[in-house]
Length: 128
Image (cartoon, rainbow, N blue to C red; front, side, top):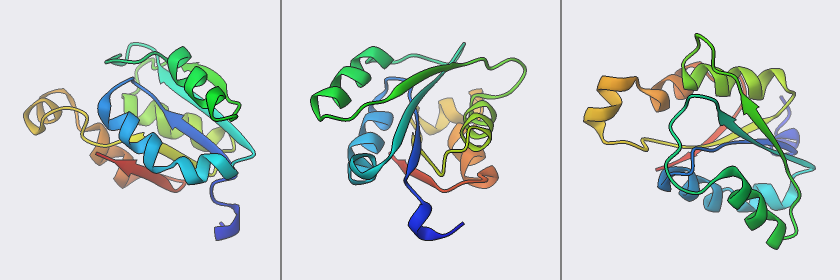
């Protein structure tokens, strides 16, 4: 993938948590230049804080338009659902929060961050 193509179509994995908000704010220069932004929320994933609608409203205040998609998780992990949806949807970057739970909780309930880092097929922008 040519580096000048990275960040034109950006998927944002959103669970409303602080880690996702940090990643979103840090990735804002990419979002401001993006041709398309889609917010991905995983069905049956944990919703922590701000809703997808809150995020869309925030982006609109910054004059950024976005689409929203609820990703059906099925038998996949949250990480697999995000990665597959972003890559198969033609996005060239995924923005996601990293380690949104304590290390103990991550080790008990699955390591979303580690799976995303080790299985990404497109560039991933992560922030804790």
